[in-house]
Length: 198
Image (cartoon, rainbow, N blue to C red; front, side):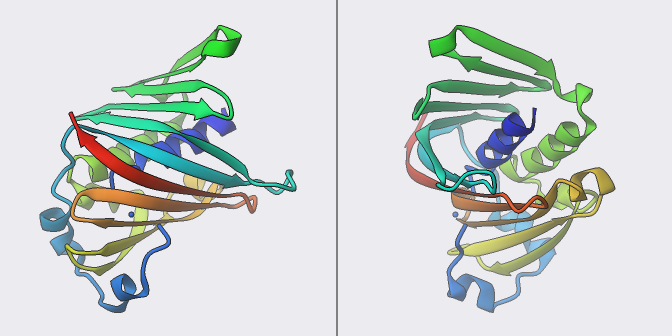
């Protein structure tokens, strides 16, 4: 389940750019301006490159593939290398398939309160409702519509035990990269490439 949580976290942020520029962090952004900047992402497909740095491994794990978002709650992450994996979040259901192994796993988000909380909060970003993040995260923001940065620190105990911090940067409702630090010391960064509007 932990592996799928990491994958979902990286995936759910794909619509908004991490490794934010210094310029984006120089000007504090009032949180009440976030809704007008993050106005909700249109349905679209994007390429991604993801790097996971795990303490148990000496070399980072690199994945690439495509991402798909359809408002208000369908997400698809199709990894093509180094292994094929299809991850689909449709409402409250998560399905993970490994085509080469002919295996599939399906579970309800409600079965894991941590996943439920994360998905609810992150869907708020994707749907242009960043104000709904505040119950789950302490939110800091910099920049403006041309380049913005969000730093999220979990408030709830269950989430804070797993995630140390998340940093997301973007332009309007588009995401290019996201960084996630786990309390175990593991680290994830996802870079988002060109978009094709559906």
